[in-house]
Image 1 (cartoon, rainbow, N blue to C red):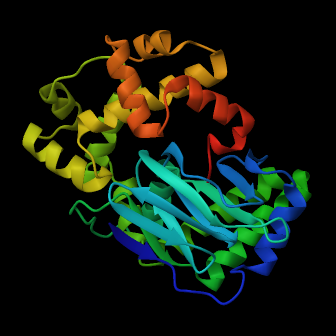
Image 2 (cartoon, rainbow, N blue to C red; image 1 turned 45 degrees about the horizontal axis):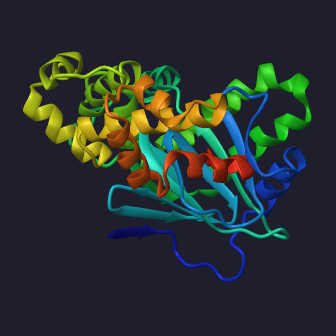
Length: 310
C-alpha cells in the first residue's frame, strides 16, 4: 500500500479564517449543498469509519482536521496544508481520521466544470496538453492566494444577494489559482476533450449511464475513440481498476442506495442493477462493504452522514 501524505502538523491542523467561515454556515455533521452552485461544505465532529462512494471531479480544500482517501492500493492523506484534486468520477473509500467536537473536520468541495475551465485556459494560455495517463487523485500544496479566494467564496453564503454577481467571479479566480499550482497540467487535461483523460472520461460516462447493461470492450472503446487495448491500459492507470471492476463498483453503490433509500430487498436491488444471481450479488456486496446488504443498511440508517463524505 502506497501512502501519499500531507506534511505532519503540530496540534490540530487548521486554517482559521476558512474554518470560521464554514462553521458560520454549517452546524451539523454531513455534506451540505450550498446556495453557490458546485460548492459543498462538509463537517464531521468525530473520525469516521471508511465510507465508500463515487467521487466526482472536484477540488477538496480542508480548513480543519485530516482525511484519507483510498484509490486502489494508494492512500492519499491530506489536511489544510494540501488540497485534493479528483480528475474523473471514480469510486473511492474516504475516511475522516482527525476530528473532534471541539475541532470538527471542515472541508470545502468545489466541483470542476470543464467548460468554464476550458474557457479560462483558452483566454489565458492555451498551451500544450499533457497526454500521459496519471492517477485520478493528486495532492498539492494549498497556496495563500487559493485560500484567500476560497474564504471569500464561502463568506458569500452570509450575503446571499451578492452570490449571483460575485460567486462566478470568485469561482473563476479559484480556477485561475489552481491552474497556477503544479496541478495545472492535470486541470488542462480535464478541460481537453481529446486528451487521454478526456477519452477515458467518455468511457466512464457511458458506464455510469449504462451500468445495468453488459458491455463489450469494443463498444466501450468506440465510445472513448480508442483501441480496446489502449483504453484498458489508460483506464486502469487513471482509475486504478479495469472497466469491468469500475462497472461492478457502480452497480454495488447503486444497489446500496436502493436498499437504503427505497427499502428494496437485496435480491430486488441486485436484479435492478444488473445481477442475475442473488448469491453472487450478496457475496460481492459483502466483499466491498464488509457486511451483507441487510446488516449494512441497518448500520447506515443509524448514521446517514456516512453515506457520503467530502
